[in-house]
Image (cartoon, rainbow, N blue to C red; front, top):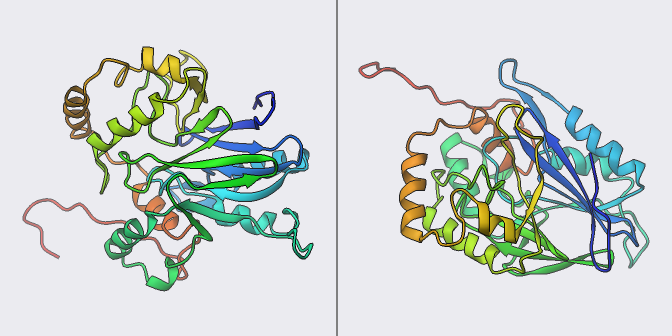
Length: 307
C-alpha cells in the first residue's frame, strides 16, 4: 500500500488493490486539511456461500483513521458489475468521524455520489431483478453534472463523463490525476468491455480520446488491473504519454473503426463476471442490501425445458 507525494494543489493518493476482484480502490486526500474521498470501494462477497464480509473495507477504514482523514464523499465511477460496493457500509462507519459542517459545526456523514446518468441504469436493472422503487430511488446522496466541480479541502475535483463501458460512467480529475474507473486499464491489458446494457465501443473510443487530450504527464488511475501470473505487481496508474504510446487496444494511431471492430468481436466471446447479478442488485441500491435479504440469480436452462 503506497501513497504519492503531494505537491501544490496535488492530492495524497493511496491505492488499495483487492486481489479477489482485481479492483483498485483509491483514498484521495487533501494534505493541508486532511479532507478526503474514497473512489470505488469494495465489499467482500463469497458467491459459494452468499456470505458478505467487510475485511477489505475495514482495511480501508484502518488506513483512513491512521491518517486522521475526514471523508467527505464516497465516490462511484459507475454501477460496477464485478464487485459489490462498500459505499453504504463506509458511510455508516464514518458517520461519527466525518468533516464538520462549516455552518453549524455538526459532523456530516460522507455523501455517496455518482454521475447524473445513474437513474436509467437503476430503472433498467430494477425491472430486470424486480427491485422495489423505494429501495433504489434517491439512494445516492448526490448525482453530478458533467464537468461539475466540488472541493475536497483545498483541492478541487472535476467530474468527467466517460461513457462506453457503461452509459453512466464518470471519471474524477484531481490536480494532474484522473481516476478513470473502467475506461482504460494498464497498457498491456488495454480497455474495458463494452457489452453491458448501454455499453458502446464507439463511445468508449471517444472517451479515451478525451483522456488522451490531457497533458502527457498526467497520471491516469485505473479501476482494475489484471497482470499475467507472476509477470508484475498490479499497477494503479500510468501516464497519458505511456497510454498513448503503449496501450494494446487504443494506442495513438488506432482508428475508431479498428477499435470498435476488435472490441465488439472480443466482447462477443467473454463470459459474464462471476458476481454480475449480485453486484448489480446491490450497487444500484448504492451499497444497501435488499430489505428481504434476498438476491436474485437468473436460471440458464437447456433448450426445450419449461418451467
